[in-house]
Amino acid sequence: MARRLLIALSILTFFLTVAHGQDWNFIARLNPALDEIVPADAKVEKLADSFGFLEGPVWVRKGGYLLFSDIPANVIYKWSPNDGKVSIFLPYSGFTGTDDTNVGMQLNNGRAMVTLLGSNAVTVDPQGRIVYCAHGDHQVVRLEADGRRTVLASEFEGKRLNSPNDLIYKSDGTLYFTDPPAGFRDGDKDSKKELPFTGIFMLKGGKLQLISKDLRPNGLAFSPDEKYIYLVDGTDGKKALRRFEMQPDDTLTNGQLFVDMTSDKSPGGPDGIKVDQRGNVYSTGPGGVWIMAPDGKHLGTIMTTELPANLAFGETDNKTLFLTARTGLYRIRLKIPGIPPPGNS
Image (cartoon, rainbow, N blue to C red; front, side, top):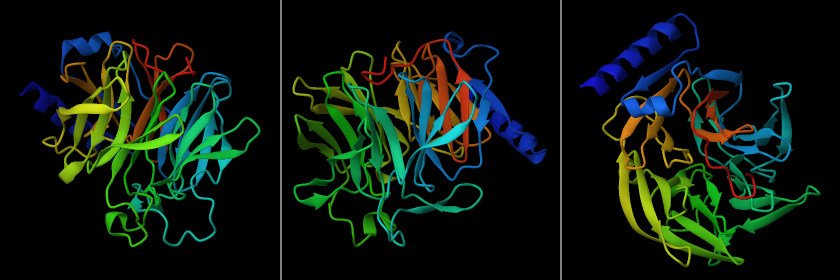
């Protein structure tokens, strides 16, 4: 009952503030344990806006800046904390072709219809190189120090990948990525789609392996000890998080439901997911960013004007949580550091 009242209050606050043309944020504190994570005076700060659809943020420690994708703009942007300015880091980040008339799903970002053809998730590999998911090109790409682009994965068993979405490195250098169909205009029904399934892939020792399929995979994150991997799963229209056990050979087993958000009818759903150093799980979800204890208990929600699609920890102490929320970039200071990508700590 208390949880429902808090959510109802936040929705009322939303409509009142939006009606007056104001940005807002509200922390729905559903469990006292949230006070150990989110400061009492925590505020969501807008850093930049007027983008197409933001995704895939990552903090780059070597250089001290944030990278994030604007998928419709087909650009990876750079945000610098020194001057607060946004600049283009990489153009043509997800689609390098010439005919974009049938590339990428289309959706409304809250202001206009946009096309998802550019890069999505961005990360840093154990050697400090930028690696990203190229939606429109159906590839996973690494950016070399001299600016060259190296394609790490583009097909499986002779068939083109769908549209790599999120990716994470294990500390041993093994790369995992999800491959839903958002890079196709008509999704699963698109005639250009070659793989008959969506799946989770592992790239290890130069070999691409399919380690799970027929889920509706999206965001990925490791537990602090790398014994588990968390997955955002939209199978059958559900809003779910799953947890898999890691095997000694780096494959996955025993996928179990971790959190089911489906019953919450607030706007939004799970997409990006991250974990802090104590094992708390952060995922976009209905109403904003859900914060969950390691046992899956929903501790609270960071609610903002715009529904976030993804998130990343960063700045010098990894206690800043950056949010890419449709057309805006935001941040909030927390008490517990997040887990950075290997090679980026």
